Length: 303
Length: 282
Image (tube, rainbow over all chains, first blue to last red; front, top):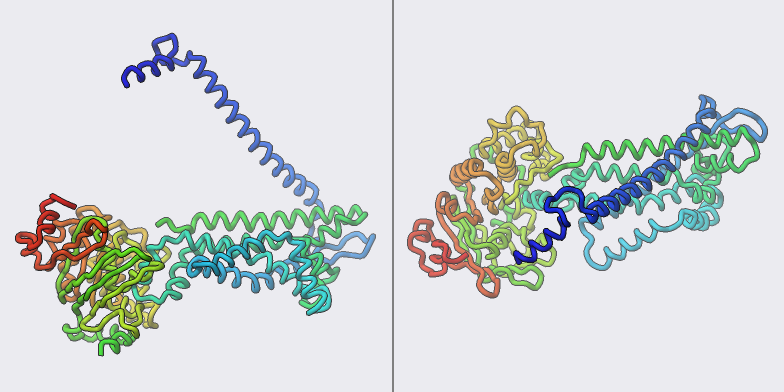
């Protein structure tokens, strides 16, 4: 053993009897290591750079279009200059609110079921179904809701159909995040609550879920942000509207669809407004995601 | 008769305790008859006949893996919380089987409280809310009553003086020993008859351990206490009765010997007990 050790050591040291960095083998290893680090750093720079480029472009092109009228007025007819995306902003908020009311309780409930009660084949089937729906292209969700509500039940393009499409997109996102966050709560807390003679459902609702509160809120806000940016399903369900509307059974404008409509038009003014809309969308949704992550970090329990 | 007591809401007992309760109602006794417990298809403990005397400390000792924790968790029906776990035999709380067909495990756990090895205060709740958790989530008590129960429980757990000025701070802001005493206060707040402690000092330093041992001896004036410990010196210091468990070659835990602490430690009847106590095995 000692002989082998000595042989390895002398190999590593090379012809000199000291351990200074003269050994060509060591230098080559260091060079390769440096090259790899450099490549990895370069990829990061390219990726982040691309992102910053996109963001920067949106800011530069979109900022000039932003003014008070942009946020509050409705779009003017072809050719007229002025107006804004007011109805689209209101529509997005309106539909997200209804989608939230439908989708968040369903998602949270499913998440709680899967994390706390789900054992056996039924739970696995539910989880699989959730994953399937999460992977559906949003336009497929749009087509489904179109067939179900727009063609049949309601009979026309409507805000309600749009909200339902968004809700379908939100439920799997909320459910998966809630399930993951609840699994992070250590079992010792559940046992502590049960050992006090608290019934299981109360222990879950009043102890486990509040402990994962930060994570649940994160999941909900991120799902809202994701749904808020969806365009394809809304094209097929809520269609779009030039006017302010609060009628759930009538077509409704939304910011992504408005951006699309403006971008597809031949008018310079509308293109500028499309950029403005894009900037608002990115800014608001980005701020939501950022805020949620910052707050979530501070609130996560360290037990 | 006792099943009716199990059906009493916690509220009435809280009221009763505020009004100089009859000392006889605290410190009930327990007994197991041929208690066996499974995890799925694996038999963990077999045929345990344990006596738990009222207003005394019974220590369950034995080497790792002998089924001590499994046994103590059967005493408040926490064993069945694990998926696939089950129990056979009887566990009698003052003569009534807690595994009887009409008995609600939730109510059993209110009467038989538990403190765990690693302190586990609820992290998102303040010290006050932690102690009050068992009560708040079970009955609608007024603010004044809650305040009084919280203070009594913290005093009984020898923690009041250290936290009375910071009741609104998070439970996680205390030291390990203080957290464990907080968990004890939390368990006391629901006014159990029996307190189970599963290696309560394992995660604590010697000073904190000493304080908890003092606390145990003080508590046994009013409560019946069962502790699991792998620390024989602790058992000899605090326990009135000792139960020695051992898992044989089949890895099934059995109760080997039971008796008064003095007798078991100085004059064990079973050779296996003697081997364990003198360090020849375990």
